[in-house]
Length: 189
Image (cartoon, rainbow, N blue to C red; front, side, top):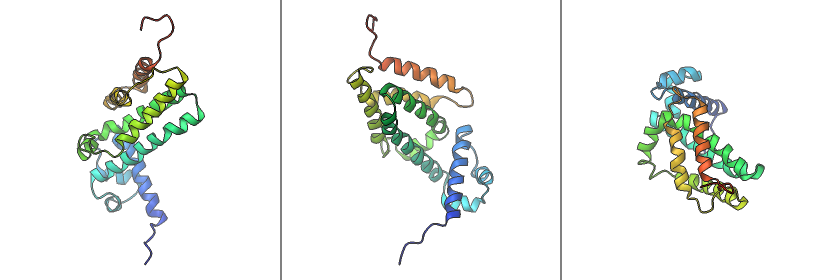
């Protein structure tokens, strides 16, 4: 017996639920599943068929979004100079931080504070790839620890998107990148 294929309307409903939930959780972490279903144009039963719990919905959002962010690192390096690729990737991480702000507690609870997170090592590897390319080009310091940079980036997940604008994230990224750069000749660094 062949496995039953998912109907195209079910796939579309699932994708719509995820898109609505992504924005809803970024705006308010306590958004109800009923409100998400209504905004997605599906019944609450349809939402529960795809995501039996709030945590299941949050983890699926996290899984999809973090994998997309990880996959962007080599794609950006293939099309941009290393420092530009690093900045663009960090900006995507900052955008992702908006979503994570609304769901961070659930993700940390399900992944034991990140210790059981299957995306942790690939995320650190993506940072390392970008840092190594920048160091090879001579624009970033050699020997930077990607996990140290991850800890710096984690500040992005603490910015309340309802209170602060993208300008704050941009200023924080400037500070992080400035600390990663090779000091200019004649500077006191």
